Amino acid sequence: MIVVHTADELRDAILQRRIAGDSVGFVPTMGMLHDGQLSLVRRARADNGCVVVSSFVNPHAFSTLDEGQPGARDHVRDLALLDHAEVDIAFLPEVTTLYPPDDTTRVTVEGLTRQLEGASRPGHLDGLTTVMLKLLHLVGPARLYLGQRHAQQVVIVRRMLRDLFMNVELVICPTIRDDDGLALSSANALLGIEERHAATCLYNALNAAKAAYDAGERSAEVLRWRMTDVLAAEHRARIDYVSVADAATLAELQRVSGPALALVAIWIGRARLTDNMPLAWDVA
Figure 1 (cartoon, helix red, strand yellow):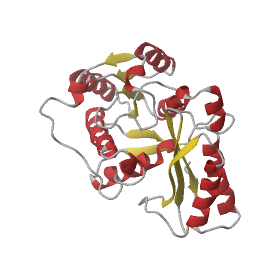
Figure 2 (tube, rainbow, N blue to C red):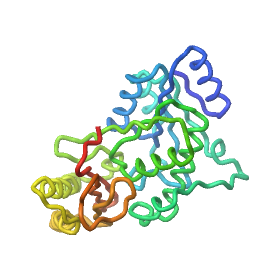
Figure 3 (tube, one colour):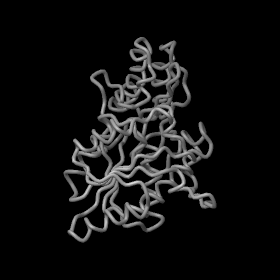
């Protein structure tokens, strides 16, 4: 595995693999790797001759709102995991590499970056789209791998790729969960023992909505009530939002008549946790 830190080093390393005829698969990460992120790497490894993984904490869109603190990255550990996963190129840029001092360009996907996560942290998702576009231009992958756990990010990036005519295939991988259903996240490390048990309310709430939908319920308001009831029963959980939204536009629905997403965000102690569940269609 080659470890690079600058844009020129990255381009040179990828060029050698392109000359060799390899397709490039790209997995962007914020470090603090867990098996959920590594599942994306394994999928990219199966699909491509060259796998590139970036590790970068974006100062303009801190983490994904539900990841650990920025100073908690352990690059030695992460690089060992990436090497074991047979990654070809690891990109660990400094902030100034992606954001030079005179950098002023920002990318906004109108209509998709202001609600849900965007409402909870104004500007967060504009930072996401900006750094994602920078990374895609540097890597130039044939395929980009994202996880369904960050469903709003998936919707936004898909629209950005379409609107900007970018020749990149977006591959969405299923959410990886612990045995009790909690989605894997580096934020889980912030949970105490009792908080970790309480966090299962997130998955239970989504399952309540999915069970009601599968039983024939189509009122989005009723589905939101089902999730809210489950979350409200857990005294450690502080609700940020509960949503049933259109899977393409993220608009809140009155009735579910096509592909939709049930989405929830809560605080438990110091950890902010998000999760989602597709309704009416299978991600994979």
